Amino acid sequence: YGYLQYLMANFKPILWTNGVPMLNASGNPIVYDADANPGGLYGSVMISTVNSNQGQSNASVVSRIGSLIFVKVSGEVKHDLKLQSFEYKNDNFQILYENNGSVHENPVGRIKVRSILGKEIANIELESWFVLPDSLRVREVFFPNDSLFGNYTAELEIDKGYGEGDFAKISFWVFPWQSVLLIIVILIILAGVWLIVSKRRSSLVVFLILIS
Image (tube, rainbow, N blue to C red; front, side):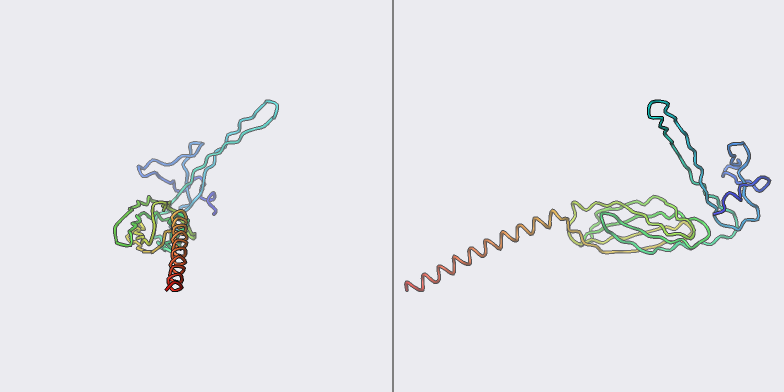
């Protein structure tokens, strides 16, 4: 919000880490209000190109590319990143974080998946992602279960990046429909065989009684 009001001349330049000021297209330093409150400021830069087609259709093609800008105003900031939920559904682990702080956060971590016997079957590295202030963000991690069957546990380990971390553990069941269908078919066949054998045994008992 209000990002452009900070990009004004004659204010404090925003610097790269190597001390060289960022410049805009006009060659002037990108700046922010020196009196701005400590925390994060966010914006984006969009670049568009238009290729006009002078042929029969008179159509034009518009291409756009954008880049996010993350600005951190130095000073005392508030860190308040909270893990809201961790679950597994539709072949995805879903990690929901809420950021109530004044600056964006970049959590990083891993997910360990274990079988019901405690054997580790997967160790998934989670690359850093960002969560903006006053927002919720879901991180989805694809984990196919085609070759799995039964009960599993998943352990989430997160480093929030400011000296704190999170740990969560969930249990979930995996029943691939192909395997379930195969089991149902086998059970139906076994039930049919058992009924046929039971009827034959009953008929044999009745026959032996009659002839005795």
